[in-house]
Amino acid sequence: MPHIGEKTAERLANHIFEFNEKDRQALVKAILEINNLKTCKRCFNLASRDLCAICEDKNRKNSVLAVVETPLHIAPLERAGYRGVYHVLGGLIASFLHDPNELHLKELLKRIEQDEIKEVILALDNSLEGETTAMYVIKEVKNQKSKVKISRLAQGLSTGSNLEYADETTVREALRGRREI
Ligand SMILES: [Zn+2]
Image (tube, rainbow, N blue to C red; front, side, top):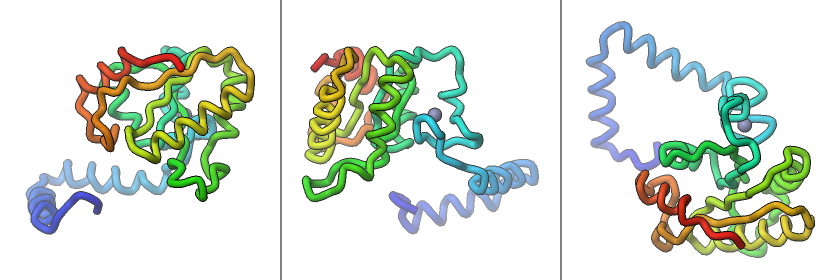
């Protein structure tokens, strides 16, 4: 498992060993649920049905869409109070040699048109790859000539930082201070 060293793994195993029957069953059930996980047909988040819980939620602001690299980056935005919808790109452009067609970009352009998106917030990592990808997405969206507003998170996240590890206040401030491009 990433980021889990041998000692932490031992501690976790010990902790699970001390679970009561009910908790142990709940853990087994949660692990088995992995078999039912799919990718949301609309936003590419993880889902247990065709659409993820966020796309199915009728109380969200459907005209604001945050573009993220992976489903992992949805949780920090949710914790920061963001209540729009998402689009998971499925990666970043590592270099100009990397094929941007592997990203879910065509689907994003289609959604901007069809779902009447008014604002696209680029919530990508503050890294070279994040920057390259943001530039590419901006160019493609602008080429589409739609009236959508494009904004980026404020530079509150330090250079090279990953959204996944940013604290709630930092993400909230980065969202609040987002700038239109
Ligand atoms: Zn979804």
